[in-house]
Length: 617
Image (cartoon, rainbow, N blue to C red; front, side, top):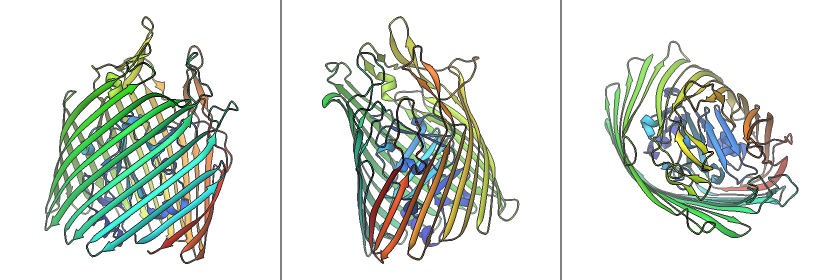
């Protein structure tokens, strides 16, 4: 269930920072009962980074791993959780791909169409159900009642990279319409690094949103289309070692959503329906290998009532997911046609006991068609002991369904699924303190989570087949997040954060804990941006500490170290005319030589230049 755009629009006019997924209804950032970060439209425009994943990398508690250059598989892990434990909303649509292991396809998500990015960390399944085990990422496109007229961008840079974006928003009386599209491409680099051909990508995003708003009533519909093709280096079919291959993948996701909401006196009512359809096609040297299809149909409704200082919310939702697969490489032997359903009932009780004390409790019951039913809980406490100070503590539970591939996947002589799998479950807590005074803000939060029934890969040395099973050990994720902020006016805002993460897995109960791969113990991020006269600028630094990965090219497979590195970006823009702006920007400004995934290279320093046009508000 997505929040009312009416509420967000009113808050934006008042300059208030609003979070949409920290509770079942939107609330002010200073009222959030859990840790959350929001990057607004100004930050996104000033940094001008083209990929949503590059912006998420700059937020606390986030680990990003790309399998080579832009356009290749990009996984986002929150507080050490798995990539499939991040739930992505795009304009209120659950956007995780059922045809790709229910992961969020961040490699397909461009940033140009987005007006805000929100990240809520920690288990949130009591509010949002399965896949919100590690946290929630919610992105939104422009509100057509705020964005007006035409905006466009054209950019060209190193590696024969090109970027185009256009948006047109119009309002007529009580109706607002926003249409936008973005395109990116690049010849890329040789991701294997052996001097072979370059691995490029081509990506297209489009959205259309129409909203009718009058008094306390709002109705709207939105549609999204994301697609991309990416070349990558895979594995030699004979040796099964990494090689400079001619692999290519084509991916697309189309989704639509309609909603209506009404607010009057102390009541609010919302209803929605959404549908998502996806396809992923893999080729080798132009020859088809396999294809997977997925779809998800969602219905939801919510009723809320204010009773004095108490807010009571009841919500229901129903999801139906489908998965199909076929291949030519094995004569169709991997063909699948599966479906599953779930129904959820949520109750949330938010209470202001005094000006200094507030609580938030949510309970959700999920009825699964394929697994044992589950109940998840989240409970949070806010205490404001003095002006500018907030103490917060929360306990949350998370759940993640096995993917269709985990359950039923099959590759002859290689992999067979396990239909007996149970959902993964997590319990976590956090506690911290926030302070805000004048232009400054600061926050420190400690967190801890325990993951049970983790789905892991296993290998049978007798049959030489791999499969999946639920680990009987308990994996742990512990850490600390710290953030600082300074904003005097639009000329300068500085945001900095640091995360310490200790993420360990335990596949067998009673055995030693092993460090999780691709998760740095230490990370530090800095964002600085501002506007003055004709100039607009933004810069970022991301320090990614040393990590480990598993190198399966070695026999036996071995743990290897991925060195730490610093990624720097800079964007400088100058307004030539009131409607025309010239800009130049750089990514990986220090030309760091690094890998997110062992064996796969990433681009060095890249420089771009372009023009931005704005006709309207």
